[in-house]
Length: 374
View 1 (cartoon, one colour):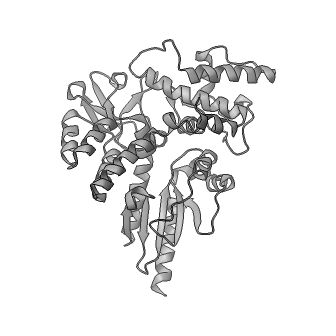
View 2 (tube, rainbow, N blue to C red; view 1 turned 90 degrees about the vertical axis):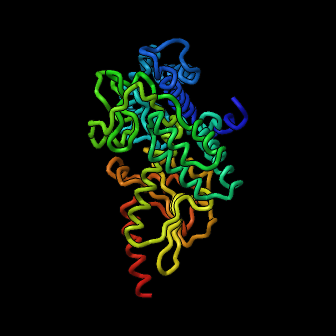
């Protein structure tokens, strides 16, 4: 464990470290078993360490502990709040669990990041920083926008489509980064010689243990649509956006693009990822008022606030008001989402607010109305 990780761990309660290790181990296990029909030894080290800590925590509380890794996986399919751990108030909702069948949930992803393990948790930030550096050196902000949209809108591609995507990038170094962004699609997700893609997000659909098709994105699963958009034969050599980019670039990116489109319908000027991604959207009103928007799509507002506390809202390019904006689906999932986020936020400013997308659109309409009467 490096110094930065040790320092982060000291800031967490012992049971938070336990959940972080288990969540990290679950994600590693998912990658490890992607093309294997069964679990194989050795299990990921964080998963085993997390299990050991959980056993000790249960024994100290005179509670029956999980007896094995397989038993732990069953625990992970139950609400985290039932584990009887000492976790901060508001950090766990009663519906949150680490696994949905065999798929790590967004809650699992958030807890995996909570330990601030730079190598494991911030790999997508390192990757995107390299992309930004390439575009800055080429003085080509449009190339960055094109590249990022590609990741968001094309999570699964046939070999031919991937070659065409490479051809859309004029900078050789970006073509190399695009090759790093994708990996061969897992054969475990194929059935009868073909993969299926989600009709909502375009991602590959996975199979539950009972064989039914589901999307990896739990928000897509919540909509209940299981009819695939496309069927891609194995012979087409399908590639899939790698996991960290799917979760932390493509998933929130869909909400970013949708919000940008909705604001443009109001006649507003929108800049996507201004100044090479200082924040997500820069909105300019007819009266020249400027809003800065950072879209956040985490299932757990407490863990999101903890992440945001380490990164104050950028003030360049300049803006008059700034907003953290959450997809409306998070409101249906947890009505107190905004309050829980703000309660855990240490970085406060009367110029920075938090709200759901629908509320932001309402406020944008009010701002347009005020500007027209000024």
